[in-house]
Image (cartoon, rainbow, N blue to C red; front, side):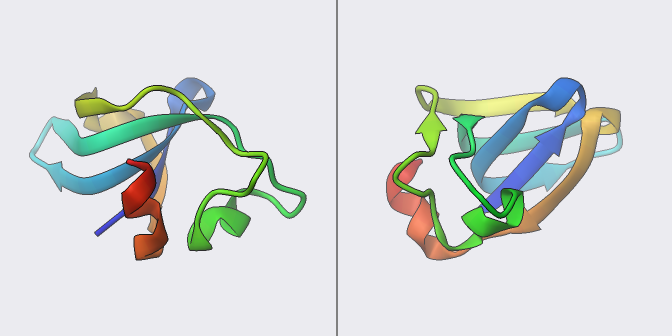
Length: 83
């Protein structure tokens, strides 16, 4: 399940999977979304990145303290080829 995860300090990641334990969120195949490239906000990315979306280099596994997750939402499988 691909998702967009919003973390504290303004970090937004497209991720291929989300797992969590008591203290840690682990995201598989992740890319930081440096520039959303949207005109209608973050939810516009549910169906995939726009032509103007800028993604950082992929990371195989991203771990973050669970309290740093502000929210996340599932996105379409169109993201999988970008991760």
